[in-house]
Image (cartoon, rainbow, N blue to C red):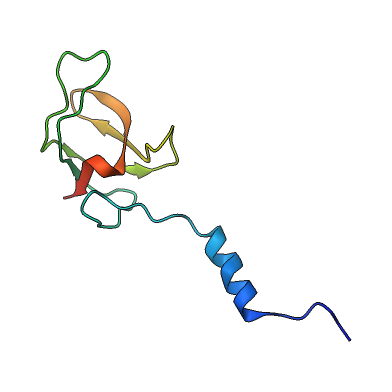
Length: 92
């Protein structure tokens, strides 16, 4: 008798653990690399004299596992490259 038998429930749980987590915006839409998003509230930026205004469009986002819970890597016009939280943007 072989003790190494295939268990279909065990195999499916292993593939679920290996899958990337789904990143959602503030409304619940699933985000993907290359999407265009809109900032939903004013964001203070260290070292900048003005905040990022609500309604600012950010094009070509990249999903990353950044510092803390920052999971979007992008370039904001007028501010340069930065990381944002998915909870402060919505898909455009």
